[in-house]
Image 1 (tube, rainbow, N blue to C red):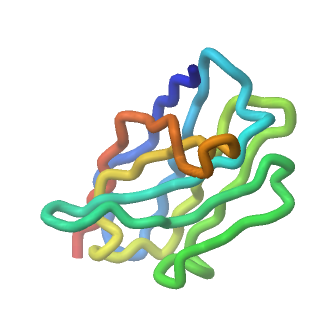
Image 2 (image 1 turned 135 degrees about the vertical axis):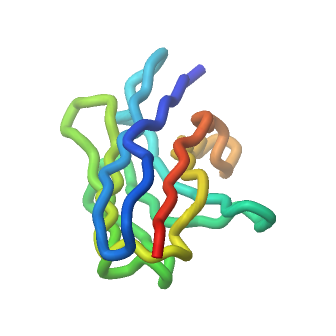
Length: 119
């Protein structure tokens, strides 16, 4: 079992930046790929970005490429999402999740952190 806790959300003006953190407890994150997802009010949850176990491979949604950066600490239990040049359409609850290779799906999820970008 992996417990995840997101933090770092808040209210920011368009063009601003935030850094989200995803901290794990229960198990180390070293052996897992981790993803960030977001869900805006009234919309489906959508994929934002993922990072593989070693941190050398990342995948970004087109909507955030060039603005968001995912990273993870070496031998640590935290994954970060640096969000720059934020837009009002980035407003959503952001979730981190751990990919379970045995089931082929994101199995463990945090409770989410709200990001609100004002115009």
